[in-house]
Image (cartoon, rainbow, N blue to C red; front, side):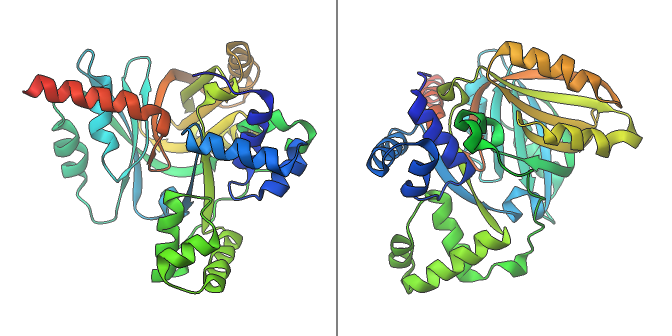
Amino acid sequence: MEQLDDLDRRIVAALQINGRASWTGIAGVVGTSVTTVARRAQQLLSDGIVRITALTRMQQGGDGDLFLVRVSCAAGQQLATAAALADRPDVRFLAVLTGEHDLIVEVQVPNGVGLHALLVEELQGIPWVRDSVADLVLHTYKIGQDWSRQLLGSAGVLSEPRTMHLCEDSHLDELDGRIVALLHENGRAGFQTLAKRLGVNESTVRRRCEALFRRGCVETMTLVPAAALGYEAEVLLFVSVEPSKLEAVAARLSEHRGVRFVAALLGQYSLVCEVIMPTTADLYRFVTGTLGRIDGVRSWQANVEALTVKRGFVVVPWAQAALAKARNTAAGAAD
């Protein structure tokens, strides 16, 4: 992935703080003209380097259970397996890994759905899956986009990560659901565009959107390949922790800007922690100077994310070509 220049990276970092920020607001943060910001940002979106989506807090894990599944595949079939999994609407996150397992997939299981059918019959029914290990996500401590904010310098100094909002079904009615569905397609869709597609008054859409974002029922997610911003290391750490110190360890990890995701697991490991760092040297300093010194951490297993395929229920644009090639190869082999 070709790296962006400094201004593009700063624009992306600002969009990660607020995916619906105005071009005027971003221009003030990055120190350039509104015209330049609009032109650059729209080009990044058009080229598929950046994708802005929106998720409800229920999609963040409040409706049903989340399972983190590590999958081993037949040799050379990692992308074919990933392509089959990416098509599933219940897959929130999917990546190709190095290490003992080939893929990591986060599956949202609605209440009442049979786990055996989903995690055994359907998953094992994919021809190239050899085995899998599924862990229940007990609690999510952090889902953050603050890893790139250092690109903004002093403008990137923000408050502590916001507490997860426990959104309930009653917080969103039928119109809210339709608005969110359109924002999931395009997180920067304007009020006028949304109103036209929904067949309602623009002021109604504006009022509904502002309420959803203000309450924390909905928030934007700006997706970008880490390599494009100059970041070399994306790693998943499965951490073994002394049970009595689980909360304290999770809190310490959540404070770190380079930690994108922290959750408690019911399985072999106590915590899963997704880390993104500018360089391998920074990753070394994190595991030795931060993770290795937290009281209560016993050990960990690390896997490098070789390719992110899906995040926030969205197949990322930069993985589309690889998935299409894998599908065509699999179809040719079947013929």
